[in-house]
Image (cartoon, rainbow, N blue to C red; front, side, top):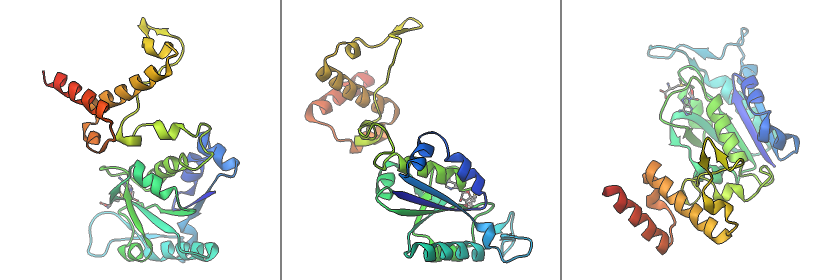
Length: 247
Ligand code: SAM
């Protein structure tokens, strides 16, 4: 069972965002547990304030160290161990499938969501083990990024996907994008499903899908191909595609 503990000022975002579809069902089945901890509950201020002006001036507000630290300490007490703490920040390492595979090995993961201009550096220095960004752009808070990560990591938890093999052949596995998918009807707006998929020849279908993956990766994400795991035959296919492209 994978347990997520999200430290946030907006627990309802997390609760609502992760309660439906595949993640919601996996939680009901007891494969996952999502706990949203309201940092505001740890404010010692009588108005439950959790932010203040930045030292040195400048725009915006900064989340104070105290409530974040107390929320974390309370959690560590309850767990009886120090879990990994991920701070969602545009200054972190950009999240990818490999990192998801690594995080999926943990039993407990803490996500710390910032808001406003961010969080007082001192508490980050004390509790954060991983700084993670979901991309080179700035959002208003860490809630959506933590949900993105939780969604992605949860798909790798055994039993969450009905079809256990599907995570293995998807985009980014082997550093290739997935081949195109089709379902009924076999003709749509005059466009037919590729014949090979109706042939029933599994060897041919497999080969076609691999080639489509390579072709698609070359067209859309050529940067991935550098680390792709290709057979000699597939490398030759890739070379032919590259030569055609240059013509
Ligand atoms: N002043 C901060 C900076 O320049 O690094 C940005 C603060 S941002 C407006 C508020 C919060 O949103 C951050 O503390 C972080 O938790 C979250 N956030 C924003 N963009 C993000 C991204 N690309 N990935 C992960 N978290 C992000």
